[in-house]
Image (tube, rainbow over all chains, first blue to last red; front, side, top):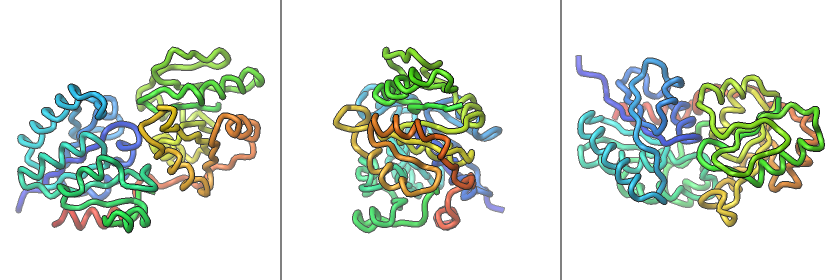
Length: 151
Length: 158
């Protein structure tokens, strides 16, 4: 029997994390490592493997660098087959680095981006295996796929 | 309880000040606010700057209605626990968030049952006056749409 598919499921805090949780049924039968920015989110996924990276936005370059380094290490040691992210900065880095190691990567743009793709979504679109918008009209306008939403 | 939340990342003084002013006129109202990192302290309602996710969910459970920024974390949590929610979008031009995506979220979700949109402080005060008319949407299942789950399962399977 082959080993279960290894997934890295990545989201920053707040709505990004809440949306990632709503994707969990898709991970059934796989080995999932969750990556987020707050240790306290472990109460949402009791018994699951959760790794924490420093929180940062693109306004704080130093913390972004620390975040990126930590994510590079996680990707290099876990070697996921698949990376799925609902955003934002941690997902961007995970998908960039995942590509170097041959992971298949899927960016699910946050449902909060109802009129255009998020900035991180725009930056990652040429690197991710697949980019999904949760809004059909945004997907059509931006040339990415639409396949349902977290709602 | 009316549970007011600005999300975990940034304060939203404009919304908290509007709720505080309303609370001053309604001393019997049971209001609790999570206000984020800010020096602007409300004078007419109990508050905290931050709360961990477990306490957040507890507050949502105990509440009759949420009043929140138009962040998807707050909106999805309200819907998942079957609570009506009044949202006021943060504005990019006031540096309340990085751009106007919350205005877009608010516009797109305004028609959904259980979600009331207040575009500014005046509309928020009006919405607070009418809270008892707000009805919750049917409780949202805790998972994404079957289409999205199926699509991701296919993607994962390769």
